[in-house]
Length: 340
Image 1 (cartoon, rainbow, N blue to C red):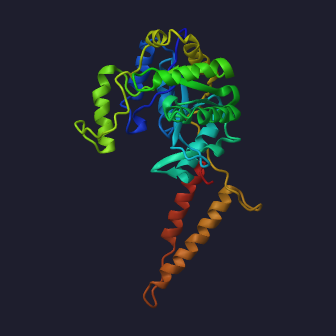
Image 2: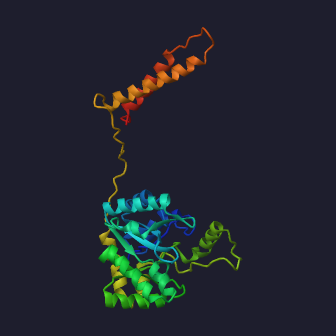
Image 3: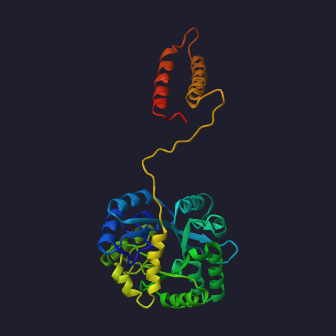
């Protein structure tokens, strides 16, 4: 299938609170709407990688992996911002997994797993970055009418990613999008920063918008009628067809073409169904099998000694059932190849 446009910013139900998209229907509709590839960029997680890979490859669609992550700039007095990271190759896949894991372990901020921008130094190889439009640090600075900060943010990303950083453009009917696009186009012309169009997809059809809003309300503790609830999404954040996206960005055709170029640059093949077992270090006089038997026997001795101390005076412990059971268990573990 000739590629005309590829969605590169899309959340699934694995983003938990802001998408109603299920993987298999997504892949079916990607094909039906004239696209042969699709990226999955769930919020702060990669939970759906295997499911996405299996469903996409089974239907002849190219899976692209990534994540929409929260970024923290410790040196700036700026709100948390977003960045879309896409996996190009195995190195990028390993880097993204480490970054997302570290965000959960070391980067909790305002109940969100976040990535410090400094962590990306030396960990950006194999990754393509999209600016996340108005939710990225560049977009936040432009919304605050701080063009100097916005350009500082841009230069920082260009330093980290070089020609693998793209200014992301969206036309989803939300405020300030056109002002952001105008500035992004200027930077593209003056600084040669490439542009890419996305639709920040949260549901498959426009008719799914109301169900999507119900899900968001359930997850955020609001009701649909609550006038105070934040309205962060629009009815236009559906899985537009390739032709719809081409028409939407007819004035910026390079942003459409770059979606295909990025998709072509992202190539990761997963090896599934193979066990990756640890190699447990053992003393030189032992094999892994013999060392497992050795430490298990020592552990059984300690256990039997403890049990013997619990017996009444003059009573003896029958060791045989314990030793036989241990031998059975160890034989099974070693025969299956799992002693490590």
